[in-house]
Image (cartoon, rainbow, N blue to C red):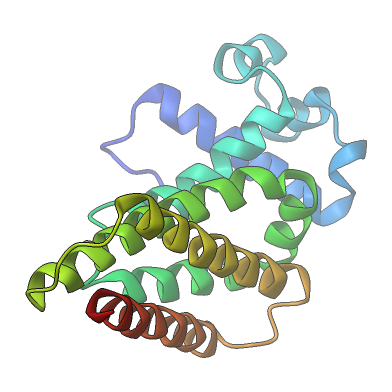
Length: 194
């Protein structure tokens, strides 16, 4: 861990605990790791751990949120969406064994973060397409349902990629998702003209 002068003492401790869990997950399964293992590994008192996290699952959620979700969602827009996704896939692939293990334990949290973000952006995309093309807005419930369908599908693709060995490059996966989003845009235009 490199010292960042802008981090608080609390954040430094959280990162220390996160790094310990990640290192331990290289050695044994998550189920076999105890809070004592984590605190002993990084020379932190158990009480300090419980000051920051309720249990090791909360620590795992914190790691995924901090390393994957926050960088993805910060200043996320349709203009930078593919760069953000590619960066997320690159980061996940760089820590492949950790994220493959983490997803086996905590797939629902990551799935919900990604799908909610994608659904929100696709709904906005449908609205933008209608507005940009001077089209009569369709039923917002229908737009939301369509966005959810594609959002959950994209999340599923990401999770399948991670759980099946991350064989495709981040760029290849990003291009697959771009193709799906482009198809969504075409569908939105076609639907609006009906």
